[in-house]
Image (tube, rainbow over all chains, first blue to last red; front, side, top):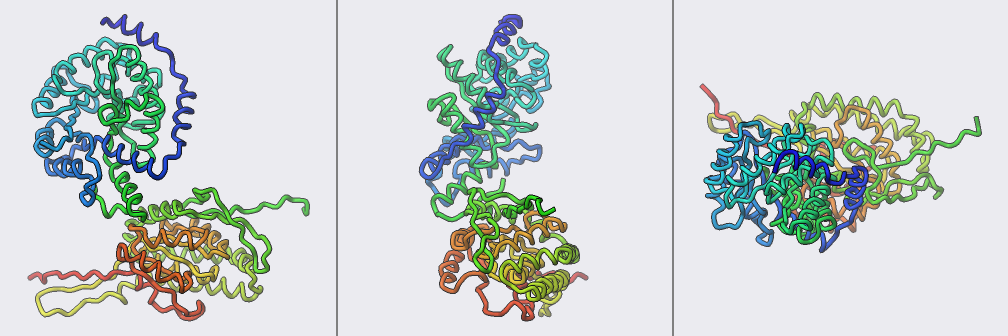
Length: 303
Length: 284
């Protein structure tokens, strides 16, 4: 597909009513989810978490500790579901794969010069191949925001196609870094661009810049995957990442998914929450529901 | 100027250094000593209590980490602010039915009590701690450290009683969630205005107004509260709350019958201190 064709298609997409999107997201966020519905939502949210550690100071020990938490988020309560995946840097993939073998928890790896994406394509592809070779089942790539914002959609498209090719059987999540895209129109265009290039998931943010995931941005992306499935029959997942810290936040996203894309997306196969601190809050709320008393951070692991 | 509109005050909660309304949106009428309407006070819910505990926990490391000397300075600053608002507190106490002289005397006693406790901030370690003689080549020190987040159920003495239970809890470095007197909560919120303008970090003192029977079970059972002072609780409810507090082995201070004008001694400060003993080898 040429840059001109892409440009024509992406700029032919209907514009996003920003005020309307924000209002709709705010209204859905005011839904009250209580009691047994809340208990179900908490368990669903736990099973959708991509437990993430993306720090320069990561060590093999920290990754193993995170993997143990991913399998048994609350060791004192075996009824707590395991999380969807652990998300690490490519050089930590083999550690995570070793720690998670046979548990059913996936290993996701960021690649392509995360978080900036400023590297030659060869380096990005080598980064991806190394992560896949080490056993990553999911690859989180970043798009070239500079090229996207300057209208060079062809480059962005071709890079995603190339990385998708390098992924082999691994799922490809494409990070749009919506905090740098400036407008919701750009979010819609980037979503369609990524989906047409072969993304299995579209992800809001790296978590390294602010603002990270927000409800209006996720709303626009959920509309994009819904419309894309209606147009092509292929279903694409969504992953908001960064800035989701409380159970209340997580439940707001679940409501948004159900009301925008529909219940087909309400599974860990099609919706993920990229976060780490939210898990402790989900566990605290879960224990509050099961014991009837407020819990505290003393009883959960720090990460 | 008699045709000025009255500027009435909205009494709200004090959580994390801010004055929010109750999450529940509720309020309850507060009456004076003769049953006449005074004001609406916020009627806090269990979620306000939860938020207050979160704020107190967040403020704890910073407050406990300050030197006793610095805490003394801040508490003395609060006393200065109280002094500047004597007339307001006196008027507020008169609404609860106290005579003019009695109200003024109680405000003075409350300020004096606060200053008295402020002075203890850099002395309690020396009094409650020790360098222990041990048979071996070690230095052995016992030092008192703050317990953590203390839930304080304040008595019905609107100012002197409140000050007498609050000051000893925070002077040693604890942070607090205070449930103000249910019939006379207004002085507590006015005190919160003093605290908010006195360099006291937000979250060290959080003040809730509302129904004690609704709030205290949640605080007593909260796993992130380290101690609870049941001073304002009637005897028949104490046992139930003690059982709830046993869930995470909270320190419990039971109600005592002493009047608020008596010399308080150090008991209320040491009630919320943990003793840490360190063995350190003697070097050569």
